Length: 113
Length: 114
Image 1 (tube, rainbow over the protein chains, first blue to last red):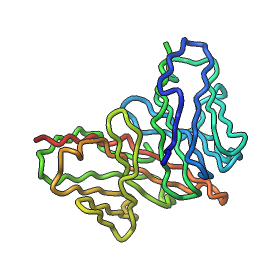
Image 2 (image 1 turned 180 degrees about the vertical axis):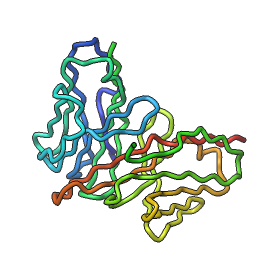
Image 3 (image 1 turned 30 degrees about the horizontal axis):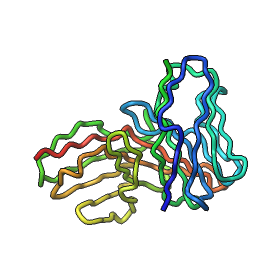
Image 4 (image 1 turned 45 degrees about the horizontal axis):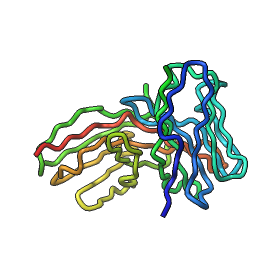
């Protein structure tokens, strides 16, 4: 069965460029999460959706980060005017509902030059 | 102080040995607890949940001490395939919406040596 998929798997951006990262959750999963994982660190929470509603965006590091899930399925994380400190792996996870196991996608490795 | 703290290691352990990791968390209102495993350049995967009464899954035993706010993971008869980073994870309920937020520790890197 299909797991969580993310695209692109690797992205190199020049500083100041806008990027969009896509997440396809497991079909039927209500909850969707975005995490940022810097090298040598654990994943850090960015934002959480329940269906199309963004219930928590407290982890987004700045207003350059924006996430959406307009139809309650696919989600996009957009980073405007990328900075070098945005370089990290961006992980998406989905779960069938609240407090159920979160299944992670393979991540998008973003490098900002 | 970090919300979830772990010794980053690395732990280099001979095959067949027993190894234990501890993790502490700062928020006493934390609701649920997990150990995730992350292989190099791969995504985290749930290893096991941690229950108040302690729980075991094969060679793996997890324990929770709410009074002292720490979680432990014990691996017995370690295998080469156990080499990975082990992430301590705490779920803190933020609101009545069922709004959940996993908070990860830095991870403990384990290498099993033949």
